[in-house]
Image 1 (cartoon, rainbow, N blue to C red):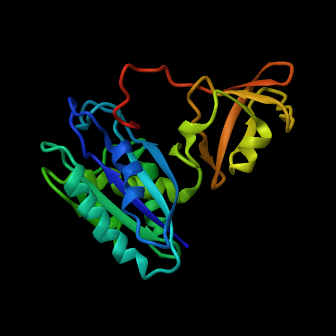
Image 2 (image 1 turned 180 degrees about the horizontal axis):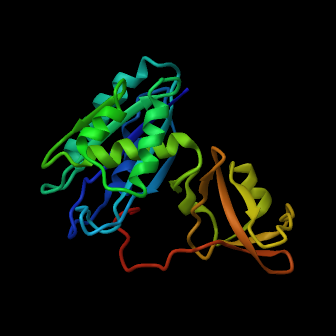
Image 3 (image 1 turned 120 degrees about the horizontal axis):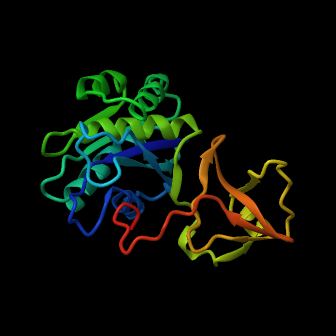
Length: 245
């Protein structure tokens, strides 16, 4: 089964690390028998009325566990993880929910609202009734993004992976077959949607970030020549990407 661990608002504008990096580091805290399936970045509403560091995004670590008894263990480890790595002056929040919890429908709806509207801590607490939601400093506003991150990730149709099968270790040019073996589905988004061949090459341009589509890591690509594809919407490389690390 899977447990969703949402983090938000753990950094400040001049910090050397962001929430995405903190979420990826959580893999090192997992107890024996648990494995990290992936970490998904979720984009929330960007609005001047919302205090955020740079992009108003949250991150959700999806952990595969032997049974539901590990949920409480992960809550404790995640709280300690925030305590160890959050930046003073931030407003960190934590949300943890396990598969099969009846609260997922509320969290999914809440996450979709957070992507388009300004919401309150009270709304987050109401949406997370039945799962763990806690603030760990400052204004505790991070509970909003943490809950939204879990909901959007649990929906299976939102966000991009910032960790999955060691994304950063893939070569810049990689075969479609090799991506498939890693569990990444390659999908053409050209108008005619031709099917990428197993031996075709994908140019990731040094930034392999599948989307979470249909509960699977999915890499959108566009045709770039015979047997060659470009990964879609590569983010412009910044001098420092604190959010993902």
